[in-house]
Image 1 (cartoon, rainbow, N blue to C red):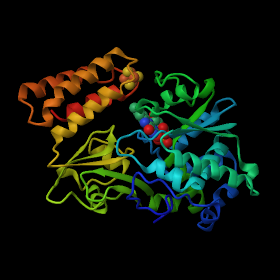
Image 2: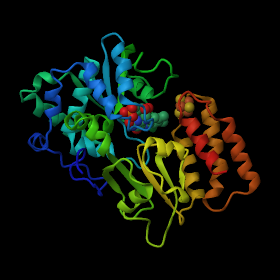
Image 3: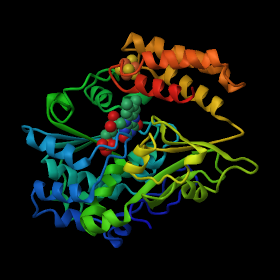
Image 4: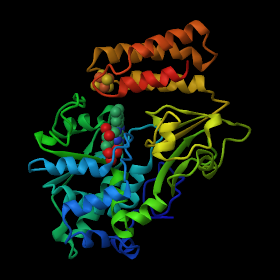
Length: 389
Ligand SMILES: Cc1cc2nc3c(=O)[nH]c(=O)nc-3n(C[C@H](O)[C@H](O)[C@H](O)COP(=O)(O)O)c2cc1C
Ligand code: SF4
């Protein structure tokens, strides 16, 4: 299956490119969808995306159609903002999509822009992804030279020096408006008041790459096949980006990534990078569907990280908590102290099992910090810590 990313599986995670040309993209049906929506209304496009059941691939899993509809109800001008930050540990899919399948991402953006009648598209690109930036710029120029040039709305590519928190949608909008990467409390949601105070849809790169597939193949085909990009890293023999049907069992995805390292075995799996609770070794038959993952106490996120028994959960939890303590944006004092305290309490777990009293303290501190910050970073840090107790 290669509906999204030609050349998948990608196992050279740091080597971006080469970019698929316009001709190559067209030879696999590229831009047929954009052509076909030219005589469709925004409502028709949104209906197809709703019927397909497309959910956001940036980590929150929000239905794309609901977001688009909310923005479309708001007054013009409206904006589409593409989230190419890809700061989630273990996630590589978005940079490869932009670098290797720039036309697919561009076609998705243009269809989404048409659906919400956006006057402009802003693409936030992590400035480390230079090949992705170049590929998108070239794709825009190549399309401009075709009869589809009239479908181009103004697009600004915005490479930005990246910090993790800037991937959060309101922090990302703040950066695009020339401010520090600080999230704002929601509401107002970006669909109500986003870029420059106007209705704005923020979508992840992969989310948009699915849109041409939905229009070309139809919602029924899409629901049946559900092509998805999985970034699998951690303690596996063949880390990579894999294009596989959503609904694959966690165990089978790990096999696709070469299985556990030699002599190791799976102790836990983080199905949503550092942002969602992990699955235990006895939960590997759970499938990657929003419902199944939710029933297992977690969700579908941007990356899949496998933790082997040799590393152990204690070390993984210490790493995760240290990450959040480092990445807090320091807007909320409670987040600064809370993430630092959790990291300090979990640090000894890297080398030994925590004593009962230590675990109880982690549980107490984590419980106190649930739902306390402006964004979900602190809540995530607390939930991840609670799982270790
Ligand atoms: C701390 C934090 C970091 C995030 N980083 C990213 C990111 O790097 N890329 C991304 O697409 N979404 C990221 N998100 C999710 C975005 O806030 C937002 O939900 C997403 O861009 C919406 O797009 P989607 O609906 O297409 O998934 C992050 C969220 C949080 C709380
Ligand atoms: S919860 Fe933490 S990361 Fe989020 S806004 Fe507050 S200080 Fe920043």
